[in-house]
Length: 397
Image 1: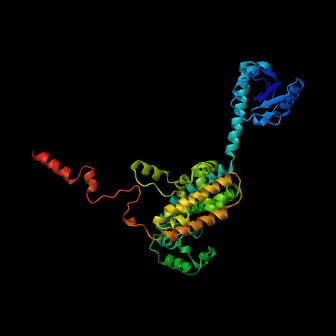
Image 2: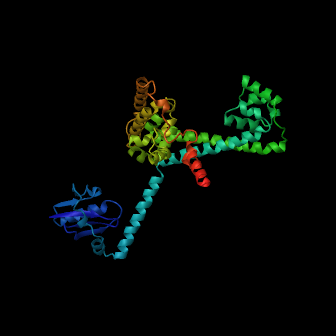
Image 3: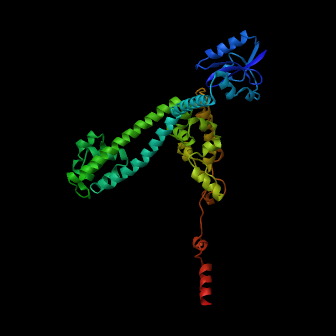
């Protein structure tokens, strides 16, 4: 005789070909119940026991095709056999579904690539905020010592000097040397502090600037720590993507895609324009040329290349990044060095084969931009010569 082994969230059952229950046991969460059902079925004379579920294949013969499995499952029959009311059966199913959903959400939320997305987004927001705050301090302190902004371009160094050295009267060789400055740069700062054209500030006026500078400088330190954390996460989660693109670009690609799984499933043409969605949709809407690259433009080999080579380089780069993401997703071997070497070889080949821009390249318009001759824009808006003449004629009539 033949029978089928099936399971639900609340029990394990042996049924015939029509779905009628022969044996049923409440589930305990392990494989012992299925083992007991199979043993009892053997005692009843069932020689062959089949199953459509992979989780039960160790107790029964696995069916290759699941097309006929629907007739075997009936919660009404299962509940009746176990002495459960329909309401009790529905409650057990709902409880199991909620438990499985909660477990899935917890597992998905704890994925390392999700953490990478959050951290790199935080770093980008830090960059935007820090630039605004640093510009405010430069303008504010520049009222007192404007020459400092011309001599110190790095925001972090500027903030450190303002918060730790203070007013321009304190810019002496000893204090600047303690801040790691020396040579001509230190001499220029000392000289500028004595000949500055800025206004004088009292200690009370300077204190808010000092507090703000110190706070922003601490934020720069936190931003550096987050960058180091991203690098460790990328090495652990996506080593090939890290090796090909670096921690920042690789993390931004994961964040733009949503997670590593989606990034690995994207075609390379999509990877190529990730981060340039606005330009892509604008090009589709206006019929202009689509963008050649998105966030991968940050790689020096792309943005340092001549304009006519960037599309080919970005296409080759996106192909290597797609391969790296797929290998990382399935925990494959470390092939980052080979992928990067192949990409650099392709870049060298492109530079050799296309050293000069194609004919007429300099006259081409940028994608998404329109150029008008003098007065053409006004005429398109109804203020051209024709409109004015028409208005005068109508007035004269």
